[in-house]
Image (cartoon, rainbow, N blue to C red):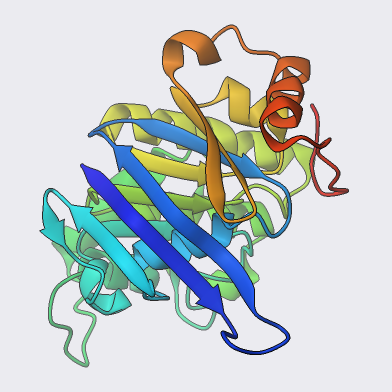
Length: 264
């Protein structure tokens, strides 16, 4: 279980550029929930992900995993519980290292790392088996440099690496936004399969309203640093984009105006 209790984050406090990124955010993610997160640019979605992962620390409030407060732990220590896939296919992997070397790093997440990655025959067999699940032929290219892969291939590898050790929390930060439609659909399908098979507690940020409604079993909407809407599965399964827009307008008192929002 992931819990955020009264989490707030203020950027540039006491200056003309002061900005509220999160304000008294409260969120409970039960084990196995797949939650999509939507909101306009500057709503606080990325700040939420950064505070959970440890990139940032909250000014006030608590972040808990299975009841344990982790808000003071650095990002590298949280990696034993948290996997993350970023929007940029170039992030999350080491481009000058091979596929198997990248997987070896992921395999040692949360453990003490020496100078040697130790790609043994047994690990190589495991990597081959896991890559086969992706269905895009990477299992036959273990020695290929990751920098030579396409954006979709790198994102598929990043997704596998983030889930390799079955983290308690999976964070997906607009992880299909930078891909062409065909590759985005591939990564979306792989995401659904991996999350379902591994029963991962997942938060996925997206700007695509149709995707936010279609994927997962719960939806939250953010605006101006606050969670303004929390839609459970029984309502979400029959939700439409127009209804979601209507609820946003009713709660916020304004229309959703963001060029990055994709309606479907």
